[in-house]
Amino acid sequence: MKKFISFNLIFVLLLLCGCSDNKENKETRMMLDTVVTLTASCSEDAFAEAFTICESYENLFSKTRKGSDIYRLNKATDFIEVSEETAGIITDSLLYSKISGDKFDITVAPVVSLWDFENSKMPSRDEISSALENVDYNKIQIQGTNNIFLNGAQVDLGAMAKGYIADQLLKHFKLKNASKGIIDLGRNIVVFGDRDYDVGIVDPFESDKTAAVVTVRNKSVVTSGTYERSFKKNGKLYHHIIDPETGYPAETDLASATIIGDSCVQADALSTICILVGKEKAKEIVQSFPGVNAVFIDTKGNVSYTDGLAEIDGKIVIK
Ligand code: AMP
Ligand code: MG
Image (cartoon, rainbow, N blue to C red):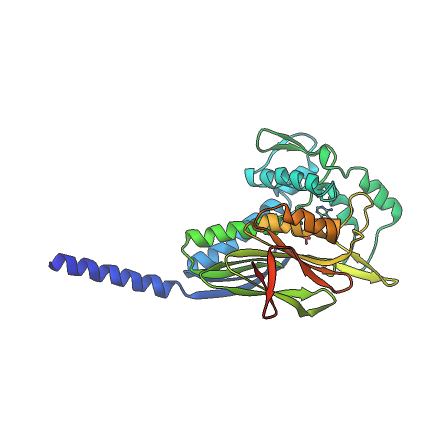
């Protein structure tokens, strides 16, 4: 009997320790070329580890960090071995290229590099034409699972990497028994835990305002917008999502597209695709993915959404 009581006492104490350890942590850091804010109810160690994970992926996917998989691939003159994770994203990107009618193309990298959004500088037509010569996702050759040769092309995982990393952070927090939290990698958001979260969608025309609110639980909410990394010249908006056919920012009737789904990397790719293909085709593509929804804000400011969503008390919810 005595043994039983002391065992129970230890068990209760362990539970109490678990509770005090599972406090809410929140921290913002500039990384992954964006503002990363993590909020999680977990141990301090598990929380700190999450930022280390971000850092390790930056070392893998960055196109400017020497020695990263992408840096090495873009310089290689023959097949090289990359991590299975990098290869997995590149392989998946090819599927999104097909789905988007060739508009989504990670080999658009050399053209992306020409556009200087920070200093509002656009490249010359000649520079764009010569950079376009090597833009073609069909150049990507994959042997086995993770031996890749780009054959003169260069890749940029900017449209998918943050979503992928957010998925990995969610796995990490779950493994560490985090009870709830928000992973926010610059408009790539994952909320988790046994509660609803209201996620605001930025007004593309006044970025300090919210154009709509979605209420979700255990979902990824990813927004791509033509207002991010952009500048205006002679009244025309030049933004960072590039049409691989022209080398110029995609001519689109969408100012922002927000994807709501279970996979953040899928939502990341799809939100970029929506901007590239425009509202009508975007709705068709998103609705072909079961359980995935989208909120669109067009260039006139109209808010619309896919058939799986509804509005209740001014908030957008999953039906
Ligand atoms: P996102 O902010 O997720 O919509 O991704 C935009 C980023 O994806 C850009 O900053 C580029 O790095 C990259 N990108 C631009 N145009 C394309 C494209 N047509 N296909 C794939 N990636 C692109
Ligand atoms: Mg994206």
